[in-house]
Length: 140
Image 1 (spheres, helix red, strand yellow):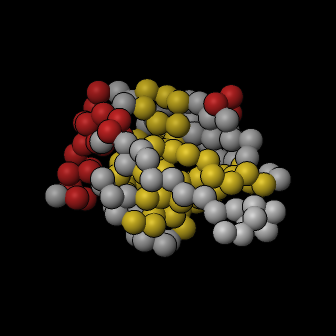
Image 2: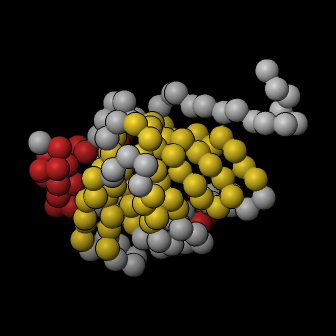
């Protein structure tokens, strides 16, 4: 095993989001399946007010939900992520995801992406139903 002064080797096989490497102004994390992000449980979206956020599907399946609107979500869109493509969610754009149980998503973001600059907004009952409907349509 090489010493960490030469190389860091990180992995995350548990559920949800985990930062793995922080360096200067950026962070790399992995996000895996979590029960609270099944389509029927998505009741809010998040945005980052200071930075873009990049997602890369490494394994499994993931739908990226994008919300239009400034203070609230006015319309929900869904994108089926393709493996190894970069999906850059722009600063200030509402988003959420749903994962297959075997999904692994690589995330690259600013190191200072924290709760204070990453607010959540609740979805209406209709928007929650739209998320479920979109997921069903895309994944069958």
